[in-house]
Amino acid sequence: MRLSTTTALGLSALTVLALAGCSASPQSADAPSRRGGDEAKASAPLSSAELGKRLLDEDDLGEGYTHKAKPAVRGDDVSVIGCPALAKLGGDTATGSSLSFPRKAKASFTYAGSSSSEVSEELYSDSATKLSKGIGKIFDAMVSCSSYQVASGTSVIDIGARKTTAPNLGDEQWSQLLTYSAGGQRSVVKQTAIRTGNVLLIVSGSPALVDTHVAKAVHKAQTAR
Image 1 (cartoon, rainbow, N blue to C red):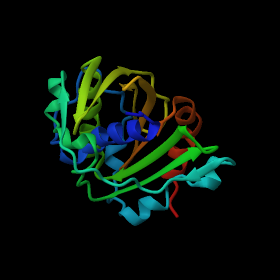
Image 2 (image 1 turned 45 degrees about the vertical axis):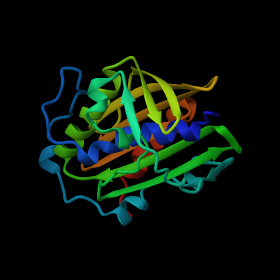
Image 3 (image 1 turned 90 degrees about the vertical axis):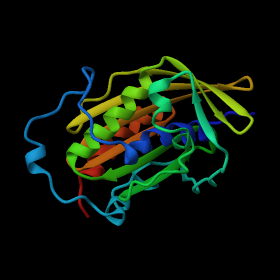
Image 4 (image 1 turned 120 degrees about the vertical axis):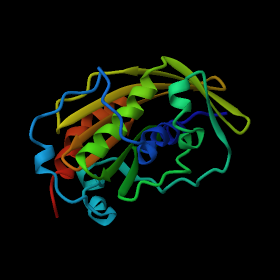
């Protein structure tokens, strides 16, 4: 199979987005630092429509970016092999087919028409506590195993994961580098998640594009319209 960044983004976003089904749990020892007082300033969660207005668009990204249509959802069963902590989150999360987080918005883009240069952004809104514990649990699970496999239908994808330094933005930060290999093809995807108040944003894609646009994404996510 040809492993494009689109495939990688679909598989990685799935797991991160599974925060919808995560119950509250204590923060791990590796949990990111939290700036004091933000919980006291928590406000009502934003609606999906409000979140949609805070997503990056072509004007924000600059010349050479094209909006991508939402990919069709596949019905194949998905299972995680070799990573018990991640498997507990449920295999279906690897395709994004069982996401139920009610307040969310997403946009995906290609850069200069290249399928290997893509970036996507997801926004979620809930209480600061729920966002923090949910996304923290998933990132902890994903980097708990340096390598594992995801099986979908007849395809098996080898995945390597490692924690990376996140930019000092928002109230909490997480970042990881994921390597996908299948059928002789290899793709590297970076995921950076930032919680700012009652909004969580996740920027995924080509590492250079994520690093270039994450600060801009945080700024727009903080700006009401």
